[in-house]
Image: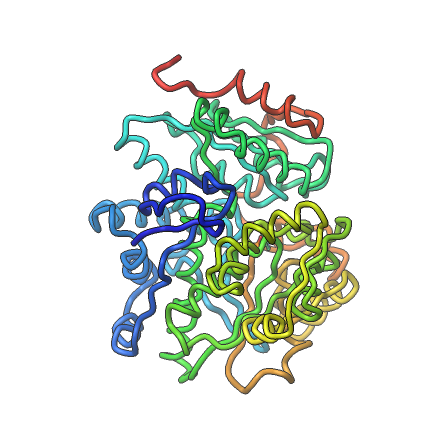
Length: 470
Ligand SMILES: *Cc1c(COP(=O)(O)O)cnc(C)c1O
């Protein structure tokens, strides 16, 4: 399998090199060429598999330069840290199918990709006799999941930027209480978009990137998207097997477009088994406006009770653009250039129609989110976290436009990660899982820095792991 850049300015690379590169050297994002698809016989065989076995089958289609033996080892180590063997249990709460993606060590869906990526990086580096400095931005959940993915690995240092005061207290504690010395937390005086653009800018400094062996864990890394493809397929096959579903719709609480892009890949992989993909946003609804109005135009970020979705510039959007533009990389390159100047992209009628075939979308405000948590709790006893509630509310809002096939709402975080919103909605605290208790009593480490590329670069320079100790 070869991987190409959405901007078409680099020669195709292997899976291993795609993972090591993160952001493509031409500023684009890497994609498998082509996205594979499987037929009914394969699907029938896959229906009998458990999560990890299915994961291996799917990854085998995208990865041809790592042996099945090694991949198996990486996958089983990655998912043995989850608190259920099912990895992503599908539950029916009486009203909705909820795919619980929060059974990993940091209780958000990002563990699914980042436990895998951490082990994958560590293996790749060991194999090559290399080291890496991971640099990433987080709106809360990525950071802790990435840190838990690589804590204590001796060939990796990790630097995580988060917007100071804009992640939940538990998210901050999860990141800053990890004692391993290869972990560096930076609280940036700014927004998540500031953090993300600083990281992008540093990665675009190719000399810095190569001298300090920078690696990426942001959702621009292809390995993350790949790991997330698995649970869409898993849930679909399960509903086909156990509930006789023909096809399955998904509602996806969306920020950076990473999760829903994995859904888009899954849909191509097992078509026609996946129906509609519902792109659910909070008040930061650039993507909903894109789907409904055919204009992709940034505006300011509003802080909400679903902070992991408080994003305006969706870093994975470019991957979808590549397909919307019929794999015309030159056009993607020009469009992204234009977007960085004007903050806006406009689409033709045919393109708008295509987008609305690929996605349905709804934007859910905070009152509606709280109401959804409250009503779900009242009628089923099930507690939704505010991100998941955005997806559930969007699915309810769009129900009449879907056929009668089941909708699966992705539960992207454990409610105990966002106790304030939950308390506001249902008048009591969500139950805390064991691993979350006692975080507040641990010592924490974090460096506060301004939203300034040069200052952040200097901090990385001082603390980076050096190849051969130099
Ligand atoms: C990251 C995150 C999202 C958004 O996922 P994207 O891949 O960025 O679209 C939604 N919910 C939670 C809890 C998250 O951590």
